[in-house]
Image (cartoon, rainbow, N blue to C red; front, side, top):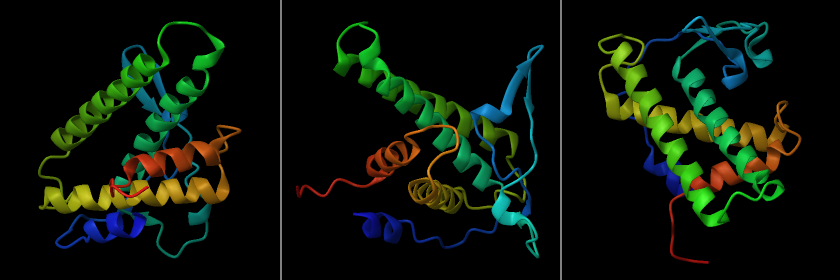
Length: 171
């Protein structure tokens, strides 16, 4: 299923520019202060230290934000059993719906703000495919390395990856 997804995301026509990017952008790096969002800790991805060219598509940061939203939802779902607030299936459905809505709003605002920017390129479908590949890459990295924000980061990343895989109908 993983190969089918990756092959389905064959990226043709992505012409977005490279730039310096945060490299470790997640919800813990975004602060709300006096009605404004501040992004902090531009230490960047340690893997980029000493790189000949630390530039890449800013969609890598977007992918990290999407993974961060997924980790937040999964952490909330993991803690659901600790508090009795109703039907677990209803809560899971609500949490996933919230995640889809927030991701959609974030991506729409991002595209609206960067509309016409050479960073996203001219082909929105190609940019969406590149973004999905970066999200998958983040999942695989978290499975391999774990998540510094969460003790059970590998399990959360695996669940996140499995949710992105297409259904095959085979068990």
